[in-house]
Length: 434
Image (tube, rainbow, N blue to C red; front, side):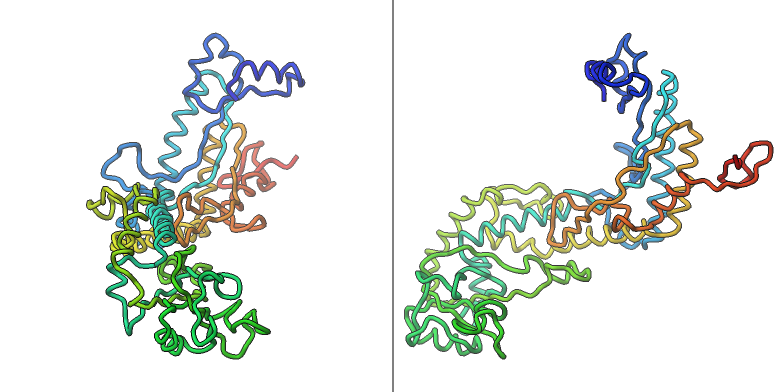
């Protein structure tokens, strides 16, 4: 805390001898003027993770936007030598400067965040993919299709456009009453999609159908509502009166983020089939132009310069967005692989030795107290893209006995051993018995 008023209030409220007036930013020292004598201690952030100084070239930090080109072929063991050790040594030098400044003012020095904080880039390629997904979701909802007009014309086959994983006409009992088209006296048909195509083609009112492959309504309307029949698969015919709320699952390629248990790799249970003859090109083109204007998220992109210089001024349409789609997924997947490599590196036994070395050096610099920092946070894997991605969690779970925690435990609980004239034995981290 750096408020003299607050310090005075605390000193008046509690026992002043138990209150330590501590600052966490040595850059603020000059602001205290003649009140500098009231400052008792300085807290210094000793976390390490970057190998580059500000503006240092040539140097590529692990969280740089183009880090994969430098570290993509490195193993997790390589990263200990290429990133963790250099980052630690660099931070030791920086911390020493701050300690000398604090000692000049005769402050007690306290270290906090005595842990490695390093991960792949936040708000990087995965952030760009997250932006692209938001843009695509908005466009799909307004247009009612997964693909742009150019893609739809190229993908049309056998009189139908198949849009895998797209949910657009989907509601209670398969489809909303206003959207239902009657085909041979019924708006639904339980059977293969190929047969549903044939039935829809014979009815002028039918403009396509939603095909539910598993789960609720996949066995038609009736006793097997929740998909517990022998052969699920039901078509619900629609008349194309509105776009509905279109969305698709999974939103990105499962192959891009293939860690075990990835929820985004669950196959979609719903597909959509549109009758090509029912799609009016002029109407659809107008709908797409309106969607681009109406989706404000598609008017900008903060990392697109890493992929293409051709950024449309009017915003991204589905066709334009999907041209960059393979590259967006590839770059986000590369960034995710960097994340996993560093997570594995931080689990290596070699990190315990590195941490013990660092903690001992901090002690020798003169820190009276060393605070480890937050060791466990929920991991943000961002398999579907994401802005604030990153591990930055040293422990996999609260009871995890990882190398960083072991090093902190070892530092806090030194071995009791025989010492010569009260001095620690050579090579031992020990205290005299008694």
